[in-house]
Length: 124
Image (cartoon, rainbow, N blue to C red):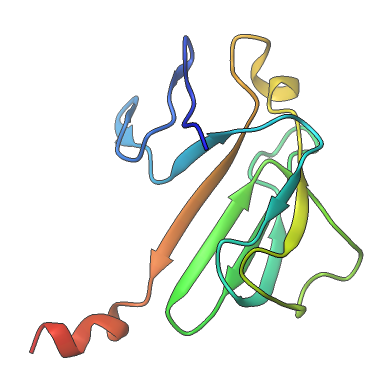
């Protein structure tokens, strides 16, 4: 796995993005390659990360995490509500160059949220 770093910016977590920080990681891919679920859980929703174009995202949830994969084509119809295992193919990489041009390396964006209640036993 390689993190994107090109003339358009860095794909590392916390990299500067104008007035904000990058909230995920950008994993370099070949357009069309299978994308696997990083967690076991339920596909909660399919969404469009950009108003323009055909880029898609998928959100997978379980009691501890929410994982979002962006710039992917969904691997089947009616994915919402489907249970998936960690490592199962859930999508195929799209070509982000269709939105940002040839200077950006093709990648899948992975963003993860943690349920803070799962950390309570380590705080108090």
